[in-house]
Image (cartoon, rainbow, N blue to C red; front, side, top):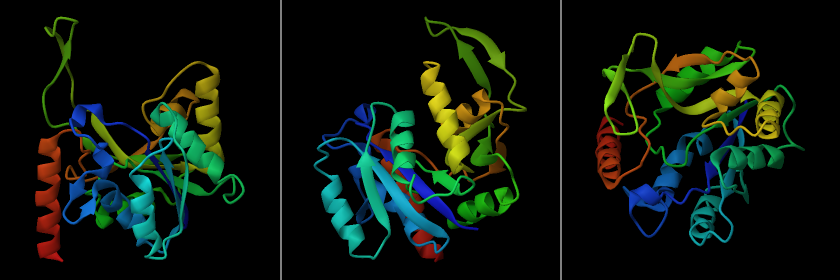
Length: 235
């Protein structure tokens, strides 16, 4: 099992409420994005990582310089206005390197707590798959659908509902085509699995840990620090 990684990291993170985008927030001695990249840079199965960053990003060069000192196989490319555009740009950077059937993982720059056991579960669970899949967790809470006034319209059955996480893992060419077809149709998928779904693919869900949280607020950052501290004690 060998794979490539694409990481969209061009978001401004306006809800985070800090001067720097959330992927560059300090976290347990590193930045969030360095923690997010770490499981892949340390994995011998990863052929290389492409990070899609915003134009004139003032923070990425320092991060890239630190990571270059580790000998990581890491490239950067221009990010887009939306996640799907950043991912497509990352795939384009791999065009001369990846074969059509190579696996590509896409992981959020703001998810610093991916467990190596979850990464192994994803890779092992999808190795024989044709389409691919993603880490996800079954929804445990009662779900409500609201109207424009934030009044409950309906209770959504949760039995077959999952919360999508990353990494998401698909074949290189199939993912390129799915994103291209979505763009040609004027559609903007919120994740890679949705783009694959639109072209008739059925991604497999691989159960992952709820600790694989996405940093959105300052409170999330505090929680991530606690999780990383607990992991360090276990190791």
